[in-house]
Picture (cartoon, rainbow, N blue to C red):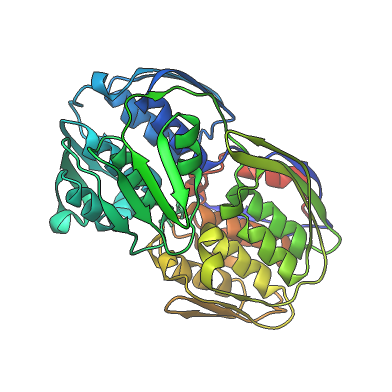
Length: 431
Ligand code: S3P
């Protein structure tokens, strides 16, 4: 347990921050760099615990991966040289490692077994196991392969045509990675677009991939060719500070080199719709990923309805959006976000409970929440549910409470943003 007591801010937040590299892109860079033949250099890699799990998995296959702070160098001869791991693979808390790697393990012609921490062991894996079974991989696991621990015997995959039953980039990516090993083309159809970092990076590594109308088709072509990857700043990490600037009166914060991929920028659209001033400058694109500087300036917020196709574009930002909504004029309604219940914890329950303990009024619903605005947050003891995004959201809440906020355990923050408290200190003048 790592309890923390946070004091409110004494004035506006100002300055400039460079948030760490994007978690989704860092995972994918390690996966494709390991599957490709040659040397891949990754810069601005996220050294958070989750991405280190993905590095650990490939090291167990014998891939040479040198990591020096945020620089990673991968030397690989491609999957034909991978060796069957002697030990089970441990994925810790990392849902992205677990789901994406199912696609890879399904393609490798040997036996692997995988497990995770209690949170990961409670998250559904059937969403990736079902399509990869259809492609020909053999799985066994708890509740007939629904949960970790999972055992996989891969190889001899055949391409499939699959309509995604859940709006999930992890599922889409697992199938596309499986498609790299399959005989014949693999086609994935998504009803509304989810993050497309796998597609962008597969293209950069020379994969035969085409996309029309939410229909993505990949044809196996071995091996991929190594390519350097520059990881933009993580918009899901920047979101905490964008929101901080939007709720602390008089604030103006710039987040530099933030990923601006359209499939991820829902948080900026919502803050702007709620009335904050959101400006972008210095845009550039490398490896199919656009990034730039985002400046958020405080303006009194108003409530919003957040539903439909925007949900996958801000799924990880809904807890911090809920905090913004407590400070807006009027009510905010979040719908179509039942997936939140399947994250590191049930984030509908955790967000409502964590903020209610600080004085907010939030009604959880089956697929979202209803948040009453203009709440005067009091502070006090609250709980982060061992979830990094809940812990960071509650830490940002402490900027606007009347009294101190005591969070039961903040150790989970190391998963995606190890330097979070240093950055919070940089931009805030705490009382
Ligand atoms: C991720 C996709 C999202 C997101 C997760 C990272 C990814 O999950 O919540 O933090 O890197 O593909 P789903 O695919 O389950 O929506």
